[in-house]
Structure formats: structure tokens, C-alpha cells
Length: 370
Image 1 (cartoon, rainbow, N blue to C red):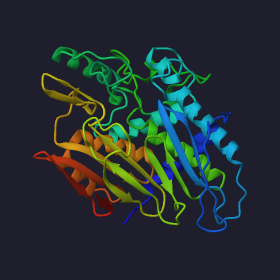
Image 2 (cartoon, helix red, strand yellow):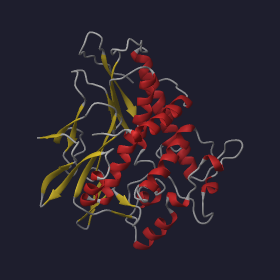
Image 3 (cartoon, rainbow, N blue to C red):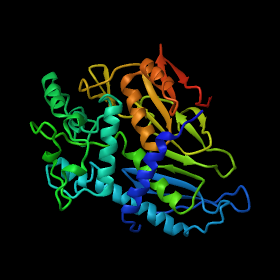
Image 4 (tube, rainbow, N blue to C red):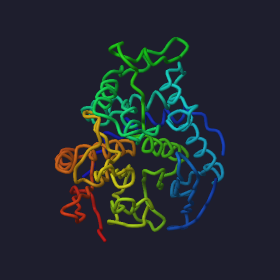
């Protein structure tokens, strides 16, 4: 049984952010399907966040509301994702995030303010395990915005001491100047040491899905699947059933989505974020030991355990994104206990057991294994 108390506040905030974000214009592929005479499914595709996105939606539905033309929807989605890139991308050197991390004074937009607040809340909820102010730790291990070198223990400890949302004020609005400017040093709660740099990779793709979904809701769409590396879905697919998704087998180097499938997840009805995090795509081997991109900010080092991937279902995609990362840090046994304690989340954990892939699913996660 799902409880959706968590999604309401987050999605309301997303709606506010969406309507405060300018919608400009700009790739395209439409396919149609039908389940009733009133249904008209299309697929919109494009490029975003270093990869591709695909949005499937029912252009008509049973509400009788007239939707915009497909081209207008496509242009609006492209504009939303461009705005997110210009605000939150650490790979875009001119983004607000990159300029903030470089020590510049910026005027943060609603996206920057919103995701900062969420990042601080998630930091507190996870006891510092999901920490968006730990960008340099990912950099020195080679999993961030820069090419890292294998760091010494002394380097890890030095960088770790400079990181952490715990060193930053929770209320970003309170430190803005009357002109709306933000200087990073004003966020420092201890007013000492280096300013922690931000990296939203643990939540940004899920957050992007939620912002696009908020736009689709605003134009009357009820049946949708938003795929921007992570997933948000609601309503029904073109066959008239809840959406289903393949869960990739966590084989090292399995970089092609859908090439090797562990099973198919049948989503319940209603709004859901569905996100998989794993240690089988971003890793390297040094001296016979595997170093993966799941880094524990408490130690400053990549984790080492037998949990290979975690798929989390939450009321929204940003929450699913954050807690998929969380599970990959804490490992199999703690993740099982955590998911059992959270009625608002469901999860599927794939782990190594003496060389074999084993699966554990929470009670509400329906997986048809291959």
C-alpha cells in the first residue's frame, strides 16, 4: 500500500518552480498509439543532460481538455531542460552552479533555490549520506566534474573536511542580498574554511523528470512516462495498462539500456518516480580492486559491498533518485531494513551472492524476473 504524503509538497513546489521558469523554444520524434477512440499517444524525444530523453504521453485522454500541438509540447520540454542545464549543470561552465562553485556572486533562479533546499533536506534525512555539497570528493576519485587522480589518504581527509551541507545554511533565501544576489561565503554557517562545492548528480535527473511532469500536468496530461535517464510515470500506457519498465542486469560494463534485463517492473497506478542506481557502469579497476562511483561522504571513499544496484519507487522521481543513491552507499542489509521502515517507498535490490545475481524486493515491488 502506498502513501503519497511526501509527493504533495514536493510536486506543489515543482509547479511553482515550473511556472517561475521561462519557457523558450527548441529535436523531435512522434509515434502514435491508441487504447480508446479518445486516446492519442505520442512520443517526444530529444537531447538533454549528456544523453537523450523520451516523453510518452496521451495527447487526448478522457478529460476533453484540448492540449497544445505536439511541436509546442516538444519546444516547451526542450526549453525546460535547457533552463535546468543553464542553472544546475556542473558540466556547463556557464551555468549558475558552475559559477557558484567557482566562487562568483550569482543571482540564483527558482530552480537553483528549489533544488538547494531539497538537497539540504535530503542531507538531513539521510544523516549526511546523500550530500550534494561533496563535489570535490567525486572529483578526486574521477567521478565528478573533473578528471581525478587516485588520491592519497591525506588528500581524502583534507577534501572531506571541506565538504558537507552541514557547513551551509539551510535557508538560502535568508542570505540573498536585497538585489537577489548570492555570494557563497554568506551560506557558510561556520564562516571558516573553504566553501563546499555543489554537485546535484544524485538528484538532478530525477528532479528534471518532476519539472517536466509538472508541465505536462499543467496542460492537462494524465497518462505519461518521462524518461530523462530516470523515470516519472502516471496513468496508463497505450495498451491501457499501468506502465512497465525493464530493470537492467547489473553486469559490469552493461552500458546499453535494455540490452541485458534482470526483470520487468509493473508499476502500480498513480504517480511514481522510478530510479535505478548501480555500480556497474561508472567504475574503474586499480591493482585488482574495483572502485565505483558510489562514494560515502562520511568516509570520503568509494563503498565496497555486494549490493550491485538499487531500484527505488517513490512518489516523485527526485526522491527515488536520492534514495537509490542512499541504498547504494549503505549496502544490502541496511537497505532492506530501511525500505521495510518506509511505507512511502518500494525497492528492488540486486546483489552478488557467490558470483550469482540475487534479487530482493519489498512487498509492493512487483518484478517479473527473466
